[in-house]
Image 1 (cartoon, rainbow, N blue to C red):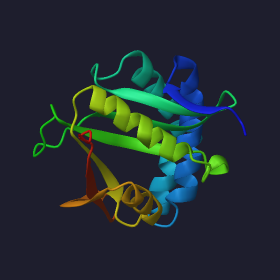
Image 2 (tube, rainbow, N blue to C red):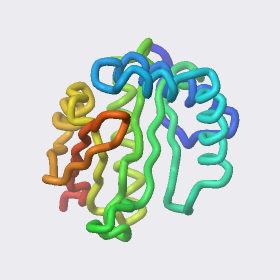
Image 3 (cartoon, rainbow, N blue to C red):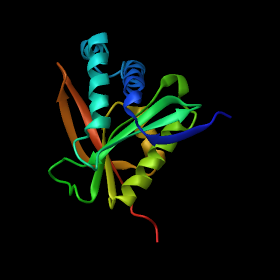
Length: 181
């Protein structure tokens, strides 16, 4: 088995993170995002913008509590997770964190990288004093919802519609990450 693990992202990882994001979105979101929107956010121009945004996430995160982790296999970045304090007005950012994204390169799907990323994220959030973790998921994203559901996540009853030329529904999922006594 290849040497696998999770570590904090480095500046040099930003290109791989953006590449994975675009590949994962093209494959995973094609069934429920409007085609023009998906083309726009995965275009070569968008890829350049994502590389810059992920570089900034590493070198100048929005706060000391925002982090970007990467999953590696034999020193190759194969997935990533970004998280920070929850920003929704109905949540307490001191104790509730948001999993902003968790994506694995489709070529390396179903190899345990997503689970390792989620586990490392929860461990680090617990160390930072968070008790609850939320994430927004497209309502039609059965893969992500099933993955998080097997880890104990459930909808919290909050939903929103994103305007993507047509409304695209997202639901907020949550889980308790309080360490067991």
